[in-house]
Every structure is written in C-alpha cells, then in structure tokens.
Amino acid sequence: MISQNPNKSVIYWLLSGCFLVYIMVVVGCITRLTHSGLSITDWSFMGSLPPLSEQAWLERFAKYQESPEFIKVNYAMQLEEFKHIFFWEYIHRMIGRIMMYVFSIGLVVLIIRKKIDKKMLPSLILLFFMGAMQAVIGWWMVYSGLQQKPAVSHFRLATHLMSAFTLFAFTFWFALKLLNPKAETSTSSVANEGYKLKWWSLLFFIVLIKQIIFGAFTAGYVEGDASKIRPGHIFNSWPKMGDSWMPEQVTMKDSFYLNVFENASGIQFVHRTLAIVVVILLCIIWYKSDKLKLTVSQYRGVTFLIYGVTIQFILGVLTLVYQVPVVLGVLHQTGAFFLFATSVYLIFHTFRKEEKIVEH
Image (tube, rainbow, N blue to C red; front, top):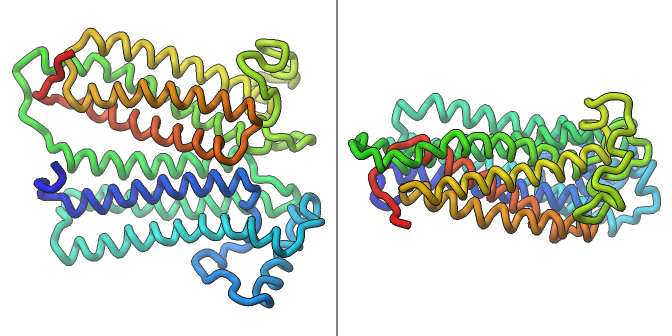
C-alpha cells in the first residue's frame, strides 16, 4: 500500500511524472496526426503565452508562412486553420513545461521536507538529464522539418518517441523500486517459479521496443520518398498487403537496409511482421505462466499483457484498414504505451523474489 510506504511522497511525485509523460505522448500523437508539429517555427517560443490579440496571431502566422511546410504544402491555409494546428503544438510544448515544473519544484519541496534519501540522488540526476534531453530531441526533430523538406525525419520522430518511453520506463522503474522494497529471500522453491518467465519477459520487451520504433517509422514520412506518403497510409488492407502477403514494393530498393528503414512498403511489412512475433511471444509467456506458481504481481503483469496485446492487435488492424483516423491512431499509441508499461512492470517482478503466490 502506497499510504503505508515511508517513501509515499516520492512515489506520488514519480507517478505524477509518469502520468505527464503519458499525456505528452498522447498529445504528441494528436499533434502528428493533425499535421500540427511544424506550426511553431522557433525554439524560443516554448513556454511563452499564446497569441492573445489578432495582431499577435498575424505575426505568428507570418512566421509560419516562411516555413517550407506552408510554402510547399499549406500555401492555401488561412489564419483560422492555422490556429487549429497551432493549438496542438502549443499544448504539446506546454505539457513539456509543466513536466519541468513538476519534477523541479517537486524535487525542491521533497528536499526541504527531507524526503529524499542520498541513495536516490544518482537516479534523480539521471532522471533530470533524460528530461532535458527529451526537450532537446523534440526540437532536433522539429528542426528537420523546418529546412528544405516540409516533413519530419522518421528517424528523428522515432528517437523522440523512444526518448519519451525511456524517460517513462526509468521513472516507473524508480517508483516500482520504492513501492516494492526487497523482501526477504524465500526458502520455498515454489515462490521462485516466476523467475522462469524473466528471460521471456525480457525478450518480449526487446521485440516490443522494435515494434514501437517501427510504429513510429510507419507514422512518419520516409526520407527520400518522393511521394511523401506515410507508410501507414498505403496497403490499407488486412491480413494481406493489397493482393499479396509480401508485395514486390517491399523489396524494390537495392539493399536490405534501404528496404527495411527507408522504403515505405518495407517499413509497413516489418511493422506487420513484428506484430505477429509479439503475439507469438505472448502465447509462449501465457502457456508457460499457466504451469507456474506466480506471485500476485507476476500474475497481474501476465494478465494485463494478454489483454493489452489482444486489444492492441485489434486496434492496429482497425487503424490500418480505416487509414489512420485520429481517434484510432491515438488509441493505438495509447495501447503501445500501456503494453510498454506492463512489460516494464512484468520484467521488474519476474526478476524479484516474492512470497505471496496466486493459486490458479
């Protein structure tokens, strides 16, 4: 119980940070799906007030009109349309600023109240470094779309997304350690059976990370692709890609690397294939866990993983078939976040020894 934990203040602080990272990822997804990410063209604007007068809006719109996106894509856009895309990018940046306040002010308060143990300091320093890097990577990503090409590099998009997921994983792991102080080592061999899932859980996590990265590739624009069509907007059929399981477009480029990382059809094919691998690994974990005596936390982690993968797979198919509508796209990204968090939770608990066993 958190209420009985001596580190409850720090735990609430860390979990608040986790929630804000989740909100930032969701709003970032909406920003991407509504093509809003390049509406604010300067770094210095981050954290300031939005335009509050018609003149301020016109000045902000004038800056956007100098960007490659307006010149080459949105040249017919009017001020009212600009306000809509500006809103999502502004909210996205504001959440980043709120995160900074929550982490920094929260830390100061906890230090004053003497809630921070010296053993926590290395983790806290790393946490703040990762938060700062998330902001820098965000601007580095946006900057790639403010040059000649009015599109964000899919590599930078994936890097930005994974930096957010990494920040969440580290913060969540830190909270889990405080929530679950080391128990006395059990002498019962039965209590250690959950350990047999630890390497499968880790393998699932590694494949899931690759799947999330290719999900970001699928959502972005591929550099060098003259058509500027996102991989998620082609072959909108399932289970086949059009009329084939593997159309010739998947291998149209000259090398394996180009087909996997810089070919829109190849990227979607890898994303589809990894989804099947994720399901297979889940079935293995499910099968093995059914024969083991698991702790409460391990049982909970496996259960959430089963439901999460099932829902996420269905959402992925629907998102593809309906050509990535905003609502389904956001739900699909939320599903990825939930699976990521559940996988971190399961790894944490399969690498621990606990005493309370679930009978099933």
